[in-house]
Length: 407
Ligand SMILES: *Cc1c(COP(=O)(O)O)cnc(C)c1O
Image 1 (tube, rainbow, N blue to C red):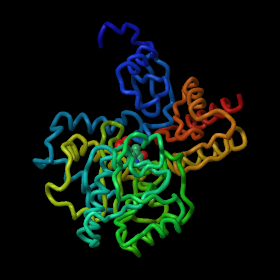
Image 2: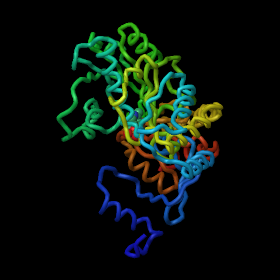
Image 3: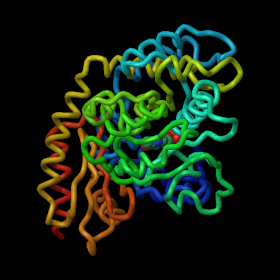
Image 4: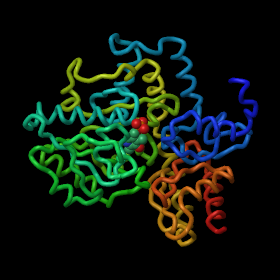
């Protein structure tokens, strides 16, 4: 650290550096983390914050979970990167264990969430041409209104958020948008050229939007009837967040492909994957798709440690139990500055009452009181604490929110 920045315990020093040197593609809360453990972040001045966002669910098991850190250090001392030009002794075990955890047959390892989504879209198109028999360059993929699947050009091509799309055109063709939760709209969008539907079982960025009961099962049924692949984006909803390994498990529904990310990297490094059936992922042949870092030894070792944490079901049970506490307690605020509470497991969208303070204002007030959440949309707060949070920490956070809304 350079001596040009003497006030290293003053958050403002770092806010100024970020503002001057980092591209302004985010608008973060004025909190400067210096260290973190479990559900807690400590800032440069030593102030402690309860992390109720958990890196948008990348930190499902908390900051620096001891088992994940131990696996990381062990792997750092052996081999970290080979590229896929060579085999290594973490990849096969990682893919086997992830397939077993998710009840699938094959794994395509990638890095970021967006990359997993892009990969799933490519696989679906290839499957449409090679297996379904869609004429060349005619494949269509159905997506849902309010979706969030990442930030690449192709992915923002089917976003309906003007902030995400403005001045990024021209966009990738081949996508058809339908209203989320509306099964008739979905059915009428299907054509003989439909390769797949890409859908979030619960829409996180849209504000933890839970679709109507039976919707996912109805989507599955239509996909089967019309030979259309169901791709579930579980990058945010998956790996324990909703109280199940996969959010679709609650619906008794199996997708053909799942995209996983965020928590798969244990809050340590980016690890993503597409998992699914051999009949679909089997369309990939050597050279047709790839990634230098995808499935690297360090990522695979961390991913395996994450899978070990999820295999016992304890994390999922804890998310269910604490999620009931969180949703119950938040629901008590309806009519007191809160219009609606949605959610499943340890994941809640709190819709603030119209005419009151914005999500951003309430997030700032919470941060001042040592609770970190972030608005999503203008009037929604998202609560997605690490699953290792305690019941007392959760109820304390909701009490603080109640205080702020009563001011
Ligand atoms: C975060 C997210 C992504 C994108 O993941 P990145 O790692 O940020 O690229 C995709 N889909 C969903 C549902 C997400 O929540």
